[in-house]
Image (cartoon, rainbow, N blue to C red; front, side, top):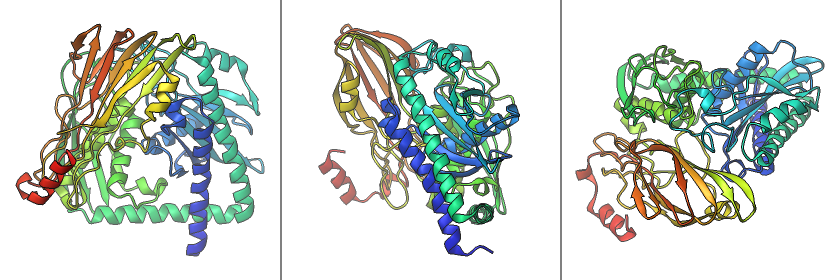
Length: 541
């Protein structure tokens, strides 16, 4: 039996290694979406299975499950990993998400034996494809979305494979930025190796291995205890995706959640079939979305392989939640994943309403703008994502302009974006009137507008919750829906599919205005005290 102090030291030590990798990745990256917005993750993974050992506190929750699948895919396809190798991969069908999330996987050897894997993910602002930024709402196959990379050796025995680098950079926009992001990921893996070397030398391999096993078992017991507190039974919900970007018709995510003892089983049978547009979700993303939803509800359970043992997710074959090649998938990680989490929340809100909340904004608000900047005589690609309202809960109102369900990423500072790109933010404010009413109201969404100052730009949107806003809970009302308006050459224009559109050509002076969803309310609105309504009026909410 390992004593509690040693367990704590090992748990924190492994987590700190991953968090330091996150910081190196962040500080060394060229792209604001990584360096300012933290759209990345780093972790340690099992040598044989790829299961997560530890992940940094600063990494995106959606990647905690996905990167397990990525490492497992590398293990299955690479038969001869060697010290100093680093594998580059972004294939959605091999444990990935959308193509812009580029993974690097490094085998870690100890005394000549494969001990574990180090891996990270960084969102590259561009990976080629039909539109700058990769978020094409009109793609009908994955090849239109960008460069698809199976596991290939980027480093072989520590040596950069220049032919691979040249191939990648020749197929994407603004390659000078991408080489910086590539080097940042490699640097993070290098720091992880050195810190793990020192940690294992200090603690001893047997102690660390025994502690890892014990920590996994404890996480499993803790998650099972939470599930056992949920009344046994079957709960059903439907979450709705606005459309697939091609066919203007909603996509349904149907969930049947069964709680039996300490096990939670998730069945998405009956969800919509594979869709024509880019809102299909690959299995790794669908599975990870369930895991992150449960972690939202039970955040005290440490992340490792044991945390997920009590969660049984049936593979939803024949639905848009199990995308097969060559279905387009640009919207899976940033948008569909949040609707999947919403379906889980809606089920649990029936079973344990005192631990749930009105639904959060549930969209990353993906806006990409790419073109030519005459100020610097160069091409540019800007990827901008936003926050929205959190749902009210039994103890208070929801947070306004909070981060998306899938991550801890923050919006890039507008001042930084204005320095990098030929734009001006003319408005950046809380969205008045967007919160769902209730005994505890939802948080407010965001209201912003951007004007192009010079050159040219092509804008694309891949958002959601435009048909209807986030649902409330326990009698609370729905939050405000997403809204997009473009002003092109003096004419106002709303995308026909409300939350999705692409290929809008901007000239200097043209404007993009977006209002993100507010959170759903909690509890009947008539139960909200008059004093709290008066406070909202005073604050301008």
